[in-house]
Every structure is written in C-alpha cells, then in structure tokens.
Image 1 (cartoon, rainbow, N blue to C red):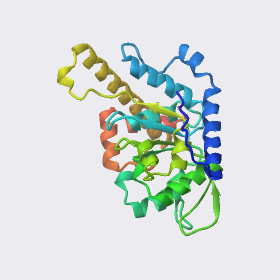
Image 2 (cartoon, rainbow, N blue to C red):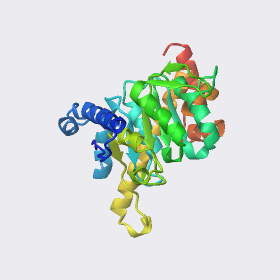
Image 3 (cartoon, one colour):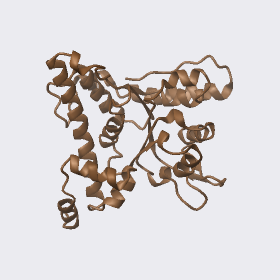
Image 4 (cartoon, rainbow, N blue to C red):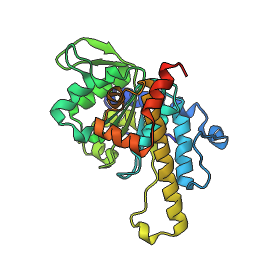
Length: 286
C-alpha cells in the first residue's frame, strides 16, 4: 500500500522532493499490488493468522520488489525490526548486509559519524552498500543528519563527517518512528517536512496489539500469538542467514545485524541456531 504526502509549500526544492516522492511511489504502484496480492504466496505459513497481519505481509511482498524507502508505522513493540528484516529478506538485496540502528539509543553527537563515517573511516551506510539500513526512532535525529539522509535518498551520495568528498552508496532505507507520529512532527517543524515527503511515499502500517490482552477472546488472543510467532520466525531465519554468511563468526554477524554480542547470543538461543553446524556446512561448500 502506498501513500503520497501532500504539502502546500510553494518553494521549488519542496516541489522537487514531492516529485521524487511521487516517482518512488509510482515505482511501487507499477508493480500492480492488487493482482500480486490476490495471488500472494509466502514462505511463512499464514494459515490462521489475523487478516490485518496477512494484509501487512502482502504489502511486504509488494514493496520488497522495489528499491523505494519505506516508512513503517505502528505502536511500540509491533515488530518494526522484524518487518524491516522481512522486507530485506524478500528483496534482491537479501545476500547483502542488513543493518538496524535505533536512533534513540545513540547520542545525537555520535550517530551522524556512526552512520556516515569520518574522514578515512567508513560509516555503517557505506558498510551496508548494496544492502538495507533500518533506522528506528528516526524522529530522534538532528536536522543536519536529516539533511544528509535527504541528499543520500535523492542523489545516492554521502559525505563523511569533516569531509567534502562525495561517496556513492547504494542502500535501501527503511525507517520507523514508533515513539511519536512522524507526520505530526513534520507538520510542526520538529522533523524535516521534505524528508518526510520522501520517506512516506511508501508506508506500511503494522497491526496494533491489544491494549488489554486479558479482555479479548481466546480466538483473537491465539491469532495475536500466532502473528508474533510468525514475526519471530522471520527474525530467526534472518539471523541464521547472517550467521551462515559469516561462517558462524558471531562478531561479524553482530556487526552486520548492528547488535552487541549479548543480544546476538540471546537471539541465537531464542531461535535454537546451531552456529557450529552452519560454520562447518559453509566451509564444506554445502
């Protein structure tokens, strides 16, 4: 499902951004989402899932075939990270890095250098070249970083901090802002309206979770549990794929996933991933 953001700003740069946003959305619309959804097939078992979840996965299938940036909307804990991973896993970029960054977890003065790099040191965007970068809580970024993201989206170029040299980078950007309403932030000027126009050209709304699980029927509760299990399955498959790519090297896998070793160890344990087996299979050419 695509959504085009409309603004009344008459300045030429904004019109150019709106045109770019429309071009991105048209690229998704050109994939004929309705016919594709009607014949939708997933590598994840969807029988018994809630209709809202099935519709979301149809949208994941449609946008995965494009390179457009994607805005994920939904309440905290709705599974933004694993939906972003699902888009990457279903795309042509699946064999390239998938990097997750929570912008609220990194001090504002450090996040720009971490993403864009410094002088001779590559940032995460360059290291993810050819792959996908997921930015959660993107509303927590500075105006300077937002301007640089805008440049990256429109030109495919970035400059490292304290450097004027342009670097070509091919990354797909997925963003979320689960702690606040991004369109309201843009309307009040707390977030770049121009960047919001481009990011929101293609958006996916994640199903809301019940506020009070004890007050819902057992049938609906079972559907919600199934949906969360399915998202967990997607996460597990992605982590296993990254570990296979790194031949079981946890340090390298943690870097690609942009998580610390303790978090990676918890993910491995949660999904019962056999790192030793994957390392042997990869080295033997299997």
